[in-house]
Length: 567
Image (tube, rainbow, N blue to C red; front, side, top):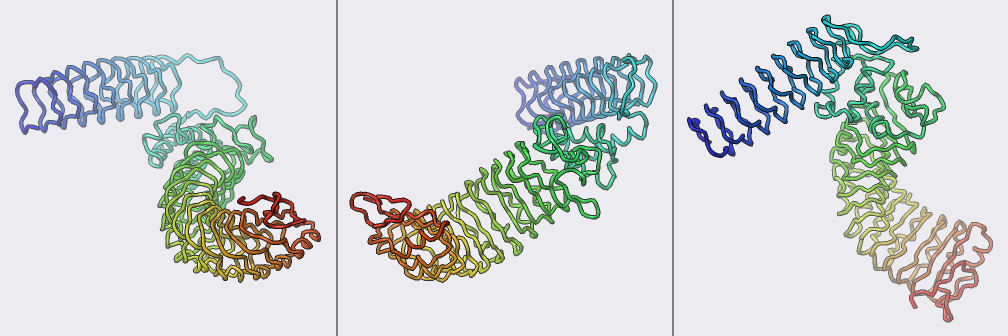
């Protein structure tokens, strides 16, 4: 761009802004805003907002709002509301409401509602009611409908105090949710704002102790009902669409939000629990305003129909201990801000459609339950899982796309009770370290690509109740020491490459309910001890081996299922 403007107009517009305005109009409008306004009108409107208003009216209205008001009236009305009121009257009324009242009288009434009243009377009455009353008399009265006897009082503002209340609430919502969100009349935030301003029986002020909390939780309601178009199963706002054991506990009732269904509060009336499991919640996004519930400890939204991403603002919930988002339709990644939740005890997002890798910062000493099964997570497990969360009890990462070898770091998790890592892409051997926890009760490593022989340490894991190593490539024999696993209830070793005979010591497993040895290279006869156990226990229902075909690999007269094996 040139430092000094040309005295002759250019044939084509500049692609960069001039530092000083030209004294002549350009033939075509610039695609960029001028840093200083032109002294003459442009022949066509600019497609970009001016940083400083023009001192002359434009021949056609701009399609974007001005950042500051013009000092001259427009020849045609703008289709976009101004961010600030004009100091001059418009020749035609705007088709959209102004965000702030004009300081000058309108020539004609507006067809849209004003957010705030004008400080001067209008020459003619408005065609629609205003949200707040005018501070001056009108020259002509508004035509009103015949009076009716109302059962409940109107919440339309009738005093200056009410006007100020609504204005303060509006500005508070702007600060919390942002201009773009509040200006969208279909947004849950805007719906919550209008409900609090006009319909909420509590009639809070912006400085009420529970204003932010009530605004946040009502925003959550509108977000999880598709803007009130859908209905919750129980205790939704609309009594005609959902039942509620106690009508006073419906969402958006005039009672304190601590009395609403699924909500629990502490002695300070701060929400600590939000439990809405299996309640028909819908919605394609989780509102960021949940992050304002700073005392929240339990968020239970399991088994609903939420298809949102997990908002990063969830990392603001520093007191959150239990997060249940499982069995929904959540998408996207685990936000890195989840690492801020050092008090997290349980993290459950299983059975969703999430993806990405696992943030390494999310593992803290308080974490005990980690459930991310049946999603699309990939990569390797962070090393911090085995160094920072040594109190982990239950780990379910099955049904994803994790890869690599199984970490020997599991040996550090000496309190682990459950480990499900089935249906992934793990390779290599089953490390002996995985049996370091004397409390291990469930191990499911099925549907991977593991190989080699079983470690001897497996037979020392005497607390095991479920052992599922099916659909891998394990080799070798099954040790007679398997009889030491006296608490075993389910034994699944099918679809591997085990060889040898089936140990008779399995007959010592009195709690056994199912055993599957099919699709291996085992041979011989099913031990009598195993058949005796099955016949004597009404709980031992499933016994499968390669006992099918004309030349069975295993002879078994007590099996409930006979397969032909790999032949």
